[in-house]
Image (cartoon, rainbow, N blue to C red):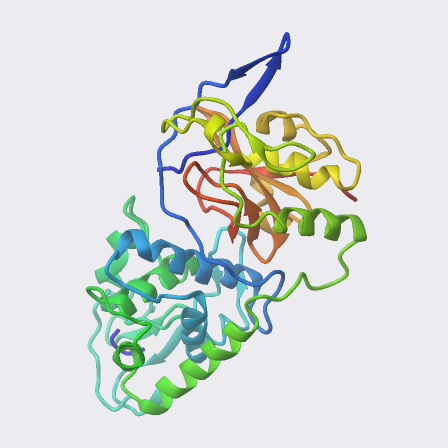
Length: 367
């Protein structure tokens, strides 16, 4: 390309002298951070790039509400065409890509198809050249174009085109524009054409996007132990069941209790909260978990947050928390940067990307 909250968490329900009491947790509604993606490694895409594509697509409804039809598969199509998903480079758990991906120097020599010199726009900060620009990162943005999205993709500063999350989110925002309807084929083609003015390029990107879409509902890949598969399938079987504050048991969905930080009366909803879903899923292999998410974090082998998402294995519980609230949410890791969880009141059990904030590590109950 040469132009180029937090959410309501899970109830911590404490059983004290036979009485139910609520942990004091302050929570705010937030947008879903990721849309559905296949489990495990997806064809030729590194797992960390899958996470980046899914997270970027999932951020669009909140960041560009008028944009319709953004998908991780479209972003993966761009990533395939531009860098083969950062092929030949390392991607650490945080998303940093090394060595940096830098395209041909755009000095008009014809390299990379460029015959028009593009003067330097970043002082060589990202492309290492203070005379001419070069496209940078896995989605191959010009430094000047990426700079136009830097504050949006990382408001705290420090946006980096060679960070998988920063670059893929910038690409999603670029394709969305002021609010394109990407479910309309004409607008979709126009968006991809704006990324690289070539009909052959558009055809290539959409062909790859279509192939990735066809993989979107795959089962877990690799040699998954029977117990792990049983737990994952138990959790997945509850997809679409409503979130209920305090709901869920080893027997299945139940009514909950009153009331969530946002005011949901769980007594009126039959379903699961996040820890209730874990109790149900793990009960299918004879594992009895505590009721509180923070206590569930102490079961089995603890996986520290410092180890990153890449240290998790399918069947691990994945936790979220911070110094002010402690552990406030739990999901079931299923591979490929994805989890099954009961996110918040008003939502339902679903598969989503592991959140890129407040990651607090995991716990491995099944070996």
